[in-house]
Image (cartoon, rainbow, N blue to C red; front, side, top):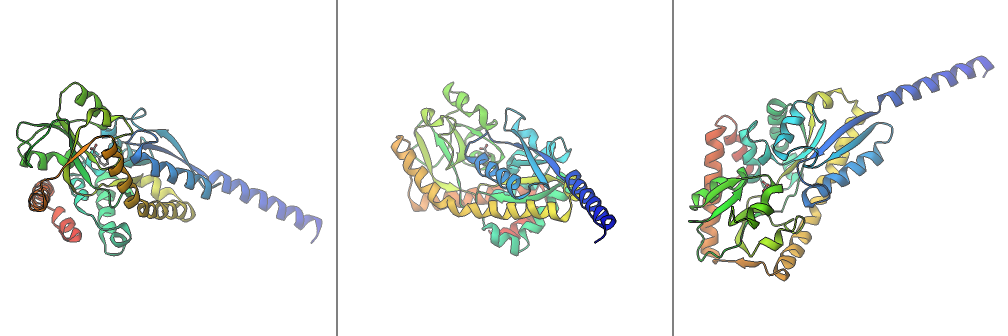
Length: 320
Ligand code: 173
């Protein structure tokens, strides 16, 4: 190679390196759950993974949890590109997407949902209604419960005031309870001050914010399926290169793979609750079955009423 061609090659190399560097994109991320707690943890692992595997291509800048943004505003913040990527449950953006309340009723593993068209349909809904890409769903195999600080002697919430989100609202009301909607950050104070007698929450995470101190009972059975989604603003998503999208998609599939840990974590958490003297209130198999059927029926009826165009297809994909 002549000196001239070598110099040209070197210049070309430098230029492409500069171009690649200019292409590195930084995404602003937020979580609707407190930093380092149960429902942010895996998202935080996902961020570390993207920052590791995406070096020079895509970087995530985590601005944090509810201290950075109120949880019920996170869905709208992704929609309007106030943030680029978010960790948020559908229950927190039902105001923008009523069918999001139905995701708790879709309980198949993500590997299956990605094959049978469920992921594609829910992604389409996010594209259209939330201007976002449905990158991943987490926490398969993690159900919800109602926790109480006063005993009930049958599966009925008459005379009981319960903190809810859309996840639990229809079910609690169907069983005669009164509901108060709050973000997670207000549960402890509402319990401590007696504003409510109980709260809805997944089987995991009650120790994170010290709620074990204000909780005496856990009502059986467990119901529905937790869903916490990673969403990317759709304009941002479309502006990424194929290679950058691949970094995010690969990390998303890896994140969904972490669901394999859940069965063990749930078992350990139930034991931890028992040790903390949180007593399970179990009314037997017949009552449990009746409870689950009602919980399922009232939730679908409510979602179908509020999203008549889309919820029936969601129900068909859910198969329940
Ligand atoms: O109870 C809640 O705040 C809620 O709806 C929820 C949803 C998913 C995970 C954790 C909590």
